[in-house]
Structures are given as structure tokens and as C-alpha cells.
Length: 494
Image (cartoon, rainbow, N blue to C red; front, top):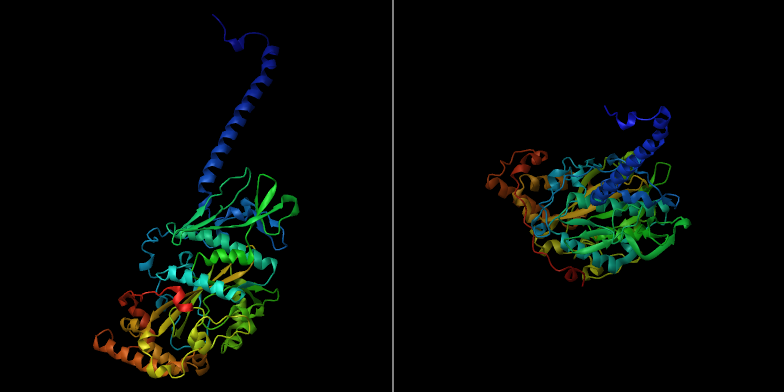
């Protein structure tokens, strides 16, 4: 019987063949690992642009001004706002019909009894940014305000952590938008991948405005060995493209969302300063008058703020975690729905900090006798959705403000709300209502709100003996409000 080949020969021959077998096995293992790595890289490249961990931050600016090399192994989804549920039904075609949450009911904005309080609550991941039917108008108007007003509305304190924070906001907001509204925003891949490098992408495509916004500065590169003050992506020539930061990053943000963003920067002793921001829609104040001031100085005009809640606000900002943002909503009545930059009730636009008067009302403010001839039903209830989000690398807090608005006539279908507003105006601390400019409109608005209350009783929406603070129990009965036609942005600033 013929023996097996491995059984033939001496023991020494068998031992001589072992190195060959080991080398063969090693080659097979290395080949398998190479194929697995190539497959993983191919899969990662396909999914990179929806990553919630923002791999692009591998090259972000550190607090010391050098390129921050972020280890992928130390990053988790819990270092920032958790991944939001996608809202694929919102499209460029139907956005003009879309209303955000009703912030009269979503947050404790209008309350009774009314007093000075932060009135914040945890923010769900899906509620950071809420585009609404005014989106196109607001973005175009914001562009014009930035062009007309410059550093009055777009400026930062030149600190490394502030510049880094703006870069973080640009990248993280873009990533969040592409996840939350996949049919409105899409991250765009780099035109040419660089071997061994990672990036969130070239930029972001705003499908509503059809703008492709780049994360990198044009024609600005640096040698890899120079450190790179602004971070970026290495090129094949040993250079590094520079990621936008500071004001340039905020310009990208301005073309994405309706929200303004104020920057709060910690001083190290528990206090915070206003370190600038993008504030095109303030209504009653100017960023150029607030920048580089403490929260104490910033809120000096606000009655009871420094005495009652300043320390609480500073503690809240200090303890705020990047993965646990908070929100609130504030309210005021204004007399111009579309000039979000400076409303007539604020008086003549001050020019000492560089602001330019671009409308007749910027020169005159509200007419002294306006209450005698105005139609109060056309005044605007402005609801500012305010978000507080801390960036994980810089520690900067971005205070977002999205002004939502509706005409007073639309409150007729909101049970108890007209009566609530009357109560607030009549019984809230006088200094608070003076700060809200109530004396400028009360003579026309309060009688009108009482009339709306009477109509609600006649229509059977309410009995008339309810407690006004129970108005939220009627939220399910409030129909969606219909917005008025939007003028062209140029007509409001000419």
C-alpha cells in the first residue's frame, strides 16, 4: 500500500518543511487582513458623511492654537447632542407650508404669574433647529443685514477657544442638519480623497437655496510641519487645507439656519462673557454693543436679571454638558413682522457702534401716536426659541435664537391666550413690562385682547370663568396658524 506523501522520508525532512508551511500560513493571514481593511475603508468612505462622531475634527484647532488630533477610539456619540430622528418628509417643495412647534405651548414662555426666571427645560435632540415657512425669506434677509451692517451683527473676540468654538459649530451643525433633514441638507464629499486622511467632507449642500458651502478657506494652505493654526486636511503636496473658523465659520452657519447665535465664553472664575456671534435678528439690541462684556454688563438693562438669576444662569452654563442641551422661549410684541434686525418699538437705531440706518423707521422709531391709528390685530407676537448648546472641545456655549412670529389676530383661535396676555400686562412687575415696551402699545393692544376674549366666550371656545394659567390644556384645540404673504427682503431695508 502506498503511503501518504507526508509520511514519506525521515523526521528531519518533515521538520525542514515546517518553516515553509509557517510562511505560507502567514501570507494567507496577511492577505486576509489586507482585504478586510480595504473592505472596511470602502464601507467607511460610503458612510463617512452621516457620521455623528464628526471624524473631521481630527484636524480641528486646539485651545492652544495647534491642530487638535482627535483619537477616534476616544470619541463616542455621547460627547454631543445624540443623533436626531430623521425628518425626511420636510422637503424644499413643502417647506413654505411648514410650521415649527407652537412655542406658546412648547415652552413656558408666557406664564402666570409672570416674573423674571430662566424657565428652561431639557432640549430633545430633534429640536435644536426648527426651520419653518419663513426660511427662505429669513435667510435672504439675514444675508442683506450682514452685508449692510458687517461687524455690528457678525463679530467675535479673537481668542483661540472662540475661533475653535465657531469651527465646531459649523461642523457639528452641518452634520446634525444632514441627519435631521436629509432632504434639505446633504454633506458633500471631497473632490479628491487623500490617502490616509479623514474628513467630514468638502462642505454642505443647502438644497433649499441650492448653495454648496465649503468648510475650507479658499487658496489657504500650510506646511504640515508648521502646525496649522486652524486645522484642516492634508493635500498630496504635503500641505494642509485650512478649515474655516471664527467669523468665516459663522458665515457658513448664516447660510444654513434662521437662528442667530450668541457666543458665551467662560472666564475661569465661574463668570462668562459675550464673546461675539452672529446676531442679525436682535430686534431691540446690537451685538456690537454687547461684545466682550460680562453677562452682568450684558444684562444690566434687564430688570431683576442680575439680582435674581445671574448666578443661576452662570452655574447653568458651567454645568451644561454638550450631550444635554437646554432650551427656553421668550416673547415680546413688535410692530414689524419682517424687519427682524431693528423694530420701530426699539426707537431710532443707534449708530455709535457702527450700525447703518437703512429704513425710514431706523431714523424715527415708532410714531408717538401709533396707538391712535394702528390696527392692533396686525401687531406681532414674536416668540424667540432659544437654545443653549455647549461645544465639547472648546467649552464654548452657543446661545441660539430663532424668532418665530404671528399676528395678534391669529390668537382668536387660541383659547384663554388673549385673557392671559391681559393678565400679564396688568399684573406683572411694572419694570418688566416697561422693558418689554408695553407702554408703547398697551392703549391699542389691551382693548383688542379683551375683545378677542369676548369673542372666544361667544363662540363657545371658553366659558369665561377658567383660570388663565390653564391655557395649555387647550393646546390640542388650537388650529395651525396661517402666515401672511412675505414681502421681498429688499422692500424692508430700502
